[in-house]
Image (cartoon, rainbow, N blue to C red; front, side):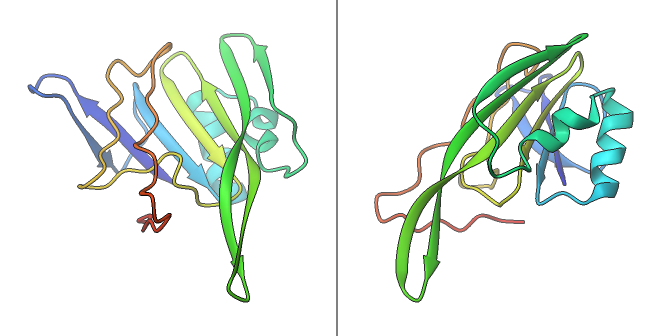
Length: 147
């Protein structure tokens, strides 16, 4: 689990990794444990089934809403390599927009959302309407996604 928050009091705004879940934070879950799912569900008041939706590799793209929480499930491209053969496939990505939180959930690590010093993710007003995807991967397809 990674947690990010944008410091808006600075110019330009800076999105930094933080240690604790707080209001207006982006929570990035990839390959989450049951404990992480339970913590996020409780602290963010998100239905557990929304958090688990993108962990099912057969999940279809869809939009769902319950109370003040919106779930968007997309299929994102993921490059896999086996015996030097690269294959492009897709996996579900869950984007959950809650009153004070943005949560992304994926069953695998992906370059779709990541943050580093060379590729910062800026999440300006973050909630509830706005989030930005990272830059596309370089043309050679090689990308180092930090933990």
